[in-house]
Length: 129
View: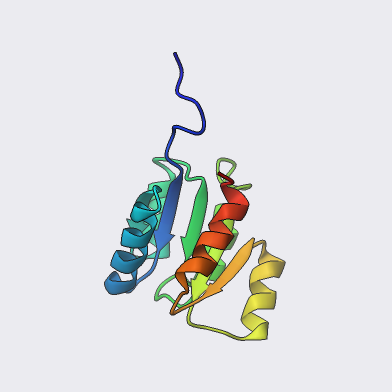
């Protein structure tokens, strides 16, 4: 008998170049019942996206080599992830960054340091219980 959608853990790809943030966010999401895959760069995230399609992508913006905006544009070009919700998770709390994120197709924006309830509320939009 196939597993129902409710029984299957939702997969979230988390991208951040700061290992401490990756650990904190991954720990929080795991405790919320999500399956987390972590990547420390945009390039690593794109490699992981060739192996699986997450239900949601949570990405930092400010990263070396490939920033979150560039990553988002690459993710949108991939047929498997073109419609995957992308939530930015960044210390940049300014209207221009939010506007750029929205114009490029980000579905939400959370400011670091994060409020657990805010993260839960954003995720509830995509994964209603």
